[in-house]
Image (cartoon, rainbow, N blue to C red; front, side):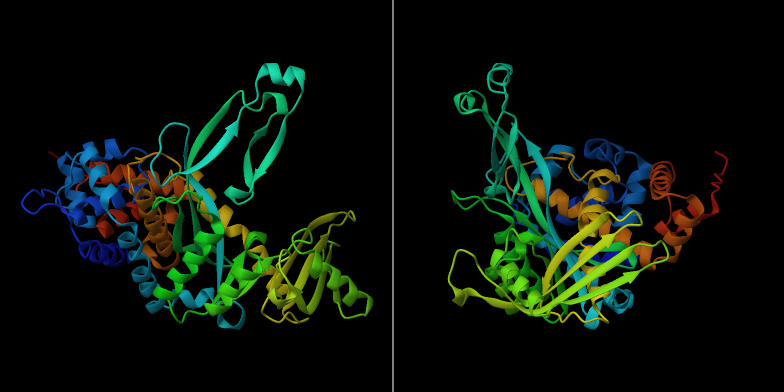
Length: 469
């Protein structure tokens, strides 16, 4: 499985047009990119050290055998080459890997309601600095509190920045002190779609769009704009794939929902009362008329599960006229624990039809949105992939291209967990994934292997026999 996955990625990399001056090219694009992928696959925290070790015969042999790398440049030259590559060229490897998943029937396990796939979409930061930046960086003004202003006014409230998709922008100072310490923070962010299923632990990185400035535009990019580009990208690569967009309340606005409809995607989107007062006013009217279905279930732990359903409610852009309305279906879920206290509550809008027989499954889908944050972003940042680590920033595409290589390595690992018997056996024999990754890194460094499969057989056996020198 591994060899086929790496070969497929390499085929895409070999198709990337090399715009460097002919006759002065010492290292191929494929060698640079596959060398970078190998670094991310083995979760190496230092690109520089990984490149240095490549000078040793053992690792050079393994990179050639397992990743098809003939030779790679030094650290700085590698970064310069990667900085110039159009990210879309790397992104094109993802649909190729999904073709393998589709052919192996792994994707069938991820079918959700009505045979559709659940696509969790969320945004996250990948880089932040108050010094290092490029033209693509998002900017964020931060006002720092001083001891003097704290003593005088005691101000320490937090402000929400609309430009940053509702994230906390910084500390709001008392009026008299606001101009004392103002700094600019530079960020890279992305919006990412991952295929999930409530009953499957593994997530499948599916599509990514950078949230970035550029082209001389003064107004900052944002999640909504990037989200619309993401939808277009999905339909370009997967024109007929049946999808359910699963997102937070940021996406529950009429223009974005219309975009989903135009792209032939269903949706389950969080819809808070504070964001949609008109919808909830209509809901209360329907409730008085007895048009809200309420279902109460009790489990073995004496907890209550309360579901509510209402069909055909108006979703409105609150800043515009009634003509901007869309009719959506609404459902909610509330968990009351054994002590009578609320343990969870949320509400969603959807184009699917919630029924007594399906509302539990819809709630499972809506609640699976946490997989984008926990099983994906948290793993990439804290599970050994070093996504927020500054492998290099560059002037054009370097930072984002490193993120894409990390995502590709993560997807390869997820596919192996689902469909690679060797990787599955190695995981069973060696325990936690961090222990397996460490053992693989060590074996990659100290032994020249005839193949990846030979190395994994040793991992499974747990014994390494070296011939006497």
